[in-house]
Length: 116
Length: 112
Image 1 (spheres, rainbow over the protein chains, first blue to last red):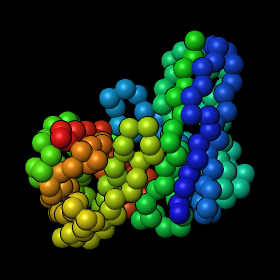
Image 2: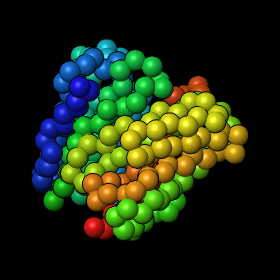
Image 3: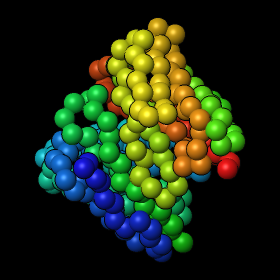
Image 4: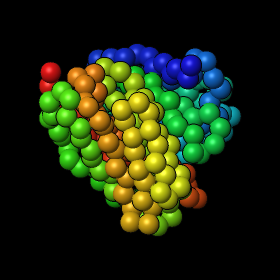
C-alpha cells in the first residue's frame, strides 16, 4: 500500500514551453502533498506544500507564478513549470502525507526535467 | 535555514560488515525525525519515524537511535548486504511549521 505515482518520469522540452508534472496517491487519500527539487549532489529542497482545496504554501525564494501548484483532489496534485528555461532543469519529486505531521511521507519516483 | 547534516557523505563497505551513519540537526524545537532509504531509480522509502528522545527502532538488520537533546540520530546496518546499497536520507521536522528539512544523504555501497 501507500503508492505514489509521478508522471512523466522524464521530460525534455524547449525553452519557453510549460511542463506539467502529475503526482497521484494511488491507494490512499493524501491531505498534504509536498513538491521538492533536487540539484546534483544536493539535498531535497522543499518548494511548496499543498493541501487539497487550498492554495499552496511556497517556500522562500520559490516563485509561485513560475511553479504553479494545483491540488484539486485528495489523490492528485500537479506542478506546472511555466515558461521553462534551462536553469529550471532539475529533478522534481513529490510526496504525499496521510494525516498527521509525524506521518511518513510517501514519495513518487521523481521527474527529470531537461530544458533545452 | 535549518542545518541538517549527514555524515559520511558516502560509504563503501564489504558484504557482511556492519556500518552506521549520522544525522545531526538543531536540538531546539524538535518535533520528529524521519529516515528514508532511496535506491537508484526508485522512490524514497520510509524506514523510521522517531519522535521521542531515546527512541530506538529496528527493522530487520537496520536500527536507529535518537538523541534530541544533543541533536543527532544514528542509523545502524548489521551485516550489510548488496541490496542495502542506497542513499539514506534523514528529515528533521520542527514543531510549529511541521515542514521537513532533509539532509544531503549518505550514499552506501555494499560490495559483494
